[in-house]
Image (tube, protein in one colour):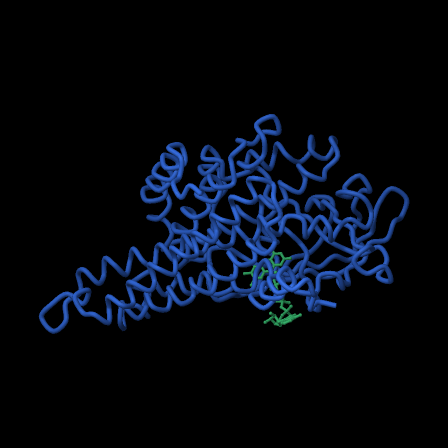
Length: 383
Ligand SMILES: Cc1cc2nc3c(=O)[nH]c(=O)nc-3n(C[C@H](O)[C@H](O)[C@H](O)COP(=O)(O)OP(=O)(O)OC[C@H]3O[C@@H](n4cnc5c(N)ncnc54)[C@H](O)[C@@H]3O)c2cc1C
């Protein structure tokens, strides 16, 4: 087993980190304080690195990146700014789904404007009464001539109010359970849904929205995949999604470590730098070790993804371990900064707020444990 990044991957990491340090990190604090959603100009600056659709093959307009390179991008973006990271990774979920499941007509219509950054897309699965148990969703779609008519509410939807389009999951027949669910590509201009943003704890420059669909017409040609394949489509990308979350928090945890090391080397108490105290060194040792363990679990899952091998257990372990570890790391980073860590004068309180939700997104920690248990035992606790 080779633990080293290739020369290209090392070079990519260096180049992207330099870009983040000079172009992105300096604008983060102001955007977060003002709750200002990243402009398209900023989002488009990320495109040359492969941030939008970089995993897609070149003939489809992507960059044909391998998974480890893509996750290097995600880690560096997570280290820099969680709010823009969530925009990028959510948007990529829809791009990948269109590439994998779309008709040629859909690919022709949607891929290019998304790859250019002209169109952002949201992922509309969660509903007020439906979270972990996605198969029981309540939004309805009824066929009427050449259109489906959508009714229902989606909630906690990343950049729901800011995106020009989205992938919305609704059932055509609730009695069929998971097999009644369809995936629809909705466009804001023609499918007149309403949006309300929901105040949240962190990532304050990004938004989550509640979207309300009332007799919204969606052309039949916007059905992604076959009728009844919606949940399969939603779940198909989960291993990539879980690795993506893992690397996003590994990036934030790295930012916590960098800030903590610097602070511990500079802050003096009792006549010496606090980094010289054994108990502070213990905290530093733990946060470094936990993030390194998270990175190795993530790389293991990425390696399996790259080989096209099954990796439900490995992706769940990577996501679970990285997100839970990152919370401890962010909390310890605040501890190392003492009282200042709790203030907005230092970034560590923001890191904690920004990642608190990631033990929920892409399947909660409890759900990851049930997946790992199912893979190991061969018994599902879901039924
Ligand atoms: C910032 C943010 C962004 C989001 N973005 C999106 C988005 O873009 N698109 C989207 O569709 N959704 C999005 N979500 C929603 C997210 O996917 C859900 O929060 C998540 O799936 C969990 O669902 P829930 O919140 O309804 O929790 P629930 O499913 O109600 O769970 C509540 C608690 O019960 C536990 N629980 C549930 N079932 C079981 C079980 N079988 N065994 C043990 N414990 C269980 C859970 O682990 C959790 O602790 C976002 C959420 C947040 C916070």
